[in-house]
Length: 442
Image 1 (cartoon, one colour):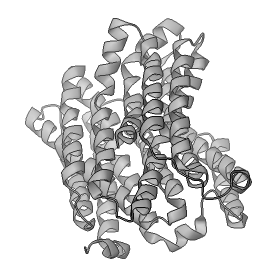
Image 2 (cartoon, helix red, strand yellow):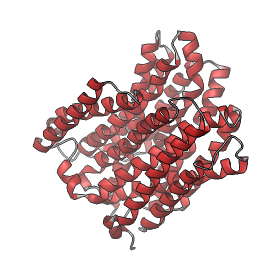
Image 3 (cartoon, helix red, strand yellow):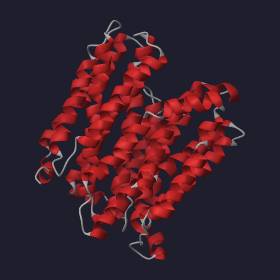
């Protein structure tokens, strides 16, 4: 678990460590906020595409290999960013770090299933919860770590820090992770890769990101391209012998699909709060940047505790219900916000959102682990993270729509109603999901 937890830290810390470096990067390289925003978006994009690809490779070539390659890519991305001569190289570095850090989670899930099968025992729920807890805790480490590096060394240190981190994770994995054998011969494994399906999936996710970034008026060619790529993806995957996304399996596996939908809705709201509440706290409520960060720290703190202690045994329905109710309650609380809202209400709303952030993530992750077919656990875990990142992409679009006329009390109300709608749908899907009944009894 030591290298797996170390690998689980890489993606969340890289997601947030860049925040404090965006302004210095723009100033030094002469690019505006619209350009530096791509340093955030491109990592989400690379992770959303790369995680199911890494999961598929882990299923065919063995998860240990994929995990080690991911660590090497993180170190390479660190060198690329630290020595970047122009802004485009920084964007490339963030894409590579998204691919490298994205390999850790699906490889870890596949490795846990492999080790449990080898020992003939079920994987302890706390083991899976530990991966989520580490991710949630390190998510809050990024901004202060980035600020320290920028203030003491410079913004290039935000990229260079990935060199020792990537090498450390690779070394730990090489020394401590058990060797795994591919399920098929290596030459045949390469032939089984669905390259057309993988390319169409990457194109669809890329066009989805462009659509959300251009809201409320995405270009018509982008929308048409998104629709066409999705239709082609469905046609290709239904005809493929070994599809990248097994649509027939998903059609039969309602538990797996429901977990993806729930995590999408959960992180649509959670990331909407992170991206949307922060500017309102600063511009309307009048809080400083550091105070606003402390208010939102409650979400991560409650989420970390809930993820580790809130899911026990095989009973997944109670934590999913509590998480959905917490998300709906926090969303209703957003409708009560105004410029004079007391600090206690702000802290309470942030803390309540920690329940779906922790309970929902771990319970749905455990459901994916149990419901995925044995030979496809890595790919299923990767798609789980894709659902999370598409939720984040959709959240950026929702925030852009709410703040189209500027940050205001009316805008936060719009964002609150979007969150209420998503929360109500999440609760409904959880209550009526009959597939959960297979996992609520010990």
